[in-house]
Image (cartoon, rainbow, N blue to C red; front, side, top):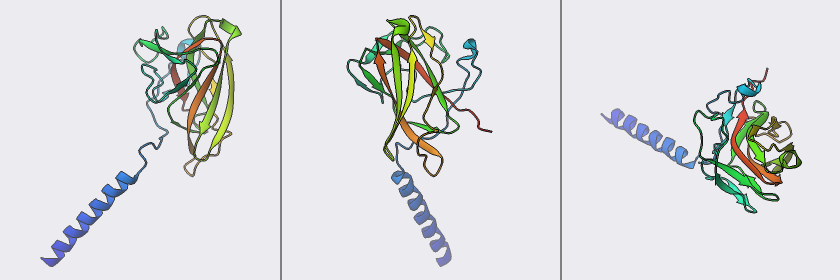
Length: 195
């Protein structure tokens, strides 16, 4: 009878320890996993992509916006997420939009999204990767605008140049800075399998 009580107490203690560890785990820890699809196939890109966190831009939850950047009516017209959205993100000249935290690693070397700019090719959109732990920054380059909705060329995520953690990942935010008046929509990360 006494051994049964000890087993029960040990089991209760173990369950309590597991629950405490679950509570102590960081809620904002990024994971490098997601549902993939091939949204850019109509444009000759057969790579698989995962949606970035709140990358559909049907809301700005998790995004940090400055300089007049805001959610506006109208979406990319290709319905690459499986349905036509209602909104996109307007980034006026000089404004910035910073994404929610996402996990990247060397198997996620690029990202793409849809965009258009009032000034067409005269406008550009610069992207940077910002990491906090440790504090790091990577310039990712810029893309020219298009007067009509179109997918932008693949851009590097910064995984190749940032210090990765022991699991080979890093949590970053993507910051977009506009030259010209932009709208962006449906941000995807490429989970390429490394050979």
